[in-house]
Image (cartoon, rainbow, N blue to C red; front, side, top):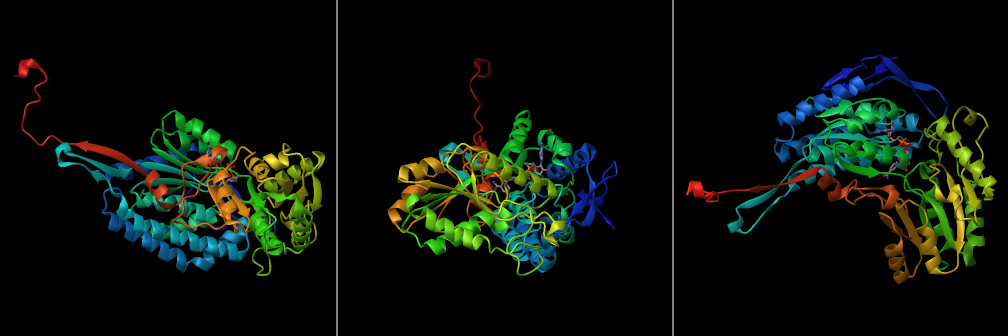
Length: 490
Ligand code: NAD
């Protein structure tokens, strides 16, 4: 088996210390690839390669339309490799093929969207008497770090605006899901992205994350991952005052009022909670339902949740894949166990699936709890698995209070036919996104990010583009007059 390599300074290379990692298919436990595993020496080389590329101006000084052409070619090549990329994502992350295909399309669209924005890094000029202008320019070397739940899509969400704005990158996928990133870098090579502009390092966050986020040669960090890791990243970045974007965890509420169609709403709730086996930062993991409809909605949810087809994502009939690794599955099962100890009432699911052939993979039943105590771990902490907790409310203010009662603030949803209430609730829920009568819709044009401990800064939209740009004021002296400040010159 060929060892998967890193891409540094336009060359495919093995890690200097020859470490390797087995990449596992979570649907059956099989080794699908062995990849090289970086140490800090490799990160040093990648940052230096990026630094040289940025300082030479070979990318930042290209005309925006030329950079845009590269991004458009990348989008085209992603689309040409759509099936292969989706298959790789499914065997590496476990998500059903249909979800993987949608990720690939989103990734291609991100490169296309930011190709358009390359030409919009507008500065400002002022009244002619000021002889001044404000210009936008690339920030420099960006360390981009992503998790394992949307390996390709997250790569595109970071690399596309980074490159569009004229920056260069050192990119690190999650150590367990590097396969689509390797393929994406093959595409970069194919479209002849200049050497050193995009560098791929493969390795664990524990081993190389600190250096990536503290290296003096790095100007900006864009990180997506867990809140605790985000805090470490921020601490590292502090020493050299890097610009930081953090997209972190969530515990998103779904508030349901009695005036909704319960069957339709139930389907959205299941989609919110169980898409991606719940391994989505914005998963709707807390259902806050009016007490008058709680029993009926709960029984609809239980009935349909039991029918979710769980299995290998390559099988077209499958609606929910495995948990992305055995380690993570054990963490989720531990939180389920703790929830029971804490008094949460298990309504359905709650176990590993041990029936062959799923016993070889890391599969968990979609799980629903009813809870009364808002302070227990299963309500307050992100599970990042297919686990929904149900709470009830009487008054709208109580629903708002419950919705805003965790440390997170990534997303949320409200289901009601009352327009005024929908808008009022949207304003009152503290999160970066609020969906009304829908869930999980994301568009590359719309800024994505969180309030509170879900992070700060934004991926996507013009906001992300602007985060990869510095603002510079240039003031000019157009006269030949002496300054006249020191008497001795007069
Ligand atoms: P994680 O924080 O363990 O890892 C994320 C990435 O950070 C990986 O590439 C990992 O190798 C790296 N990393 C680990 N330790 C590091 C360190 N000390 N310094 C630098 N990098 C380090 O998260 P995960 O388990 O891979 O992903 C799940 C988390 O990601 C969840 O909390 C989820 O909510 C969050 N997430 C957030 C968003 C969002 O848009 N807000 C999107 C997807 C996932």
